[in-house]
Length: 342
Image 1 (cartoon, helix red, strand yellow):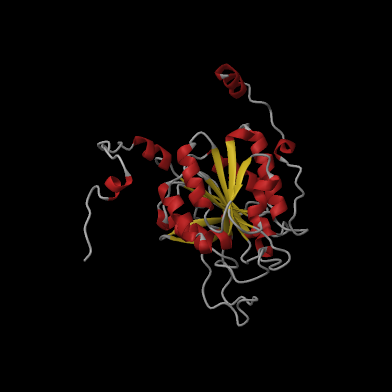
Image 2: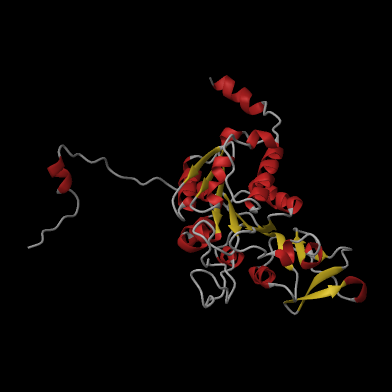
């Protein structure tokens, strides 16, 4: 049996996108951005040559959380907001697996925000795909934690009264070791970020701007439309300058700890050379850049190495305890430190 398993792992077959497809009918609304994300994920995994039985996809509740049904891998469809918790346990018990969590801006940043925060600070070896459509889609169009200020929805008829939560800023504050952002319909760049995130050892958070064409259609048109995408977004890669535009003629320069948009031919300043291990204050400023004054930053914002949670758990010294000499339940109940209440 060991010889068979060894040969199976050595002779990893060449996989294709079709190998990750299932017989399940994909049931998202026609035109939903989830279709594009699913196709990109299947394409990326086919290039990594990771055996399907060596990966698991874990989801919570929401439209995005149907993802495991449509991937020919192991998976769990868990409970609302708790996918990071289950992924943590699985990562510790099976560190040999490639694990992914699929969640949404409601599932991951509302009821599950606490669990996601601790997943990132612990550096659990999991890739988190956070689908952000700025709305609750499965429950039919209520305000989510990322909805724009003043947005009118079924649950906010007078407009939202709170600013949106920025997922990447939460990740920075939690010391997440890999932070990325992509757009559902920008396949090449989405696949580049996904491949880097899955290869990373530690927690990878990839926020994916995803269009909900039923309840929040066009939320990202200003940056997702291919006619304007090159002018309105800048793709960040470690050790590469932040330049953008159809002719790559624009850039972001860092001046006195503040970013400025520049036209390369007319400026004496050089575009900022992005570093994946840059200090958090600079990365924080990158996450704050918004249209129309600046391009929106996508790509790989942070990429650093630190011990994973499974590694630290494995290194922990076992507790030294004396075996209990208990013969019945009465002894057990009266063992150790007890007291009487009168």
